[in-house]
Image 1 (cartoon, protein in one colour):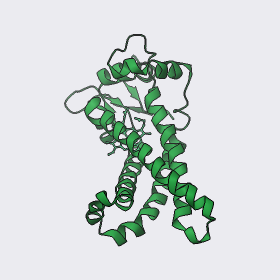
Image 2: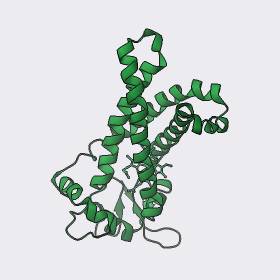
Image 3: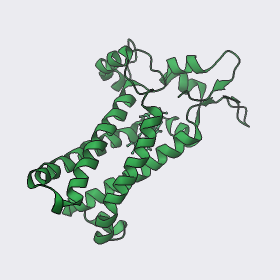
Image 4: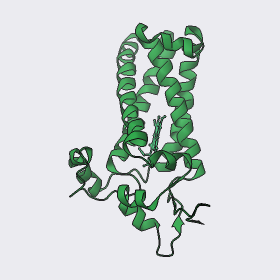
Length: 221
Ligand code: HEM
């Protein structure tokens, strides 16, 4: 499908995320934030004040696991959509080896990024793996009466550890998607980015998806 490349203000646009991709992303984000904040409230007495924000201790304890299941449903939709595009190729592995350069804005010698760079792809796989650990250990904690003791002991170690790592990854992701890379957030809200943004952050994707006709193609699957 082709889309027009100019706004009413005659500003050139490159289509970045379809409506479905954005809706799924924000359902994943909202459910993750709810599960993360209610989980922190249950986990640490120092963070119990968070429970008040979400309706009190009883409500938070009751809703946390159900929201966790909802997160898994939404993340599964995101996973099905993006799993092929998130495969790490040879360039991505080189990018990861040189990622310290990306961190200090020294882009010389870094392989060009496609629609997603290797850091974004790694975050995706990391969230998928830690999401699985969280749901598996969470189910054990949810029904302790029917679970063997050893499984319960392993689950209470895995659940908070996986949560802390996962939340750390998302804090970095939120920083990258807002303050660190201006223009990204609009892509996930309005679905489009400027050609300059696309060419500088995802040059391989930009070349593949913007033809000489001046029109841009919708994100590939
Ligand atoms: C308030 C929270 C969040 C904000 C502000 C945010 C922002 C963004 C933005 C701006 C993009 C587009 C990046 C680009 O165009 O290159 C993006 C992409 C993405 N987001 Fe989020 N996001 C949030 C939460 C989450 C959560 C909780 C997850 C998963 C658990 C997630 C997973 C992804 C993935 C897999 C992508 C595609 C690859 C990437 O850019 O990392 N996001 N997000």
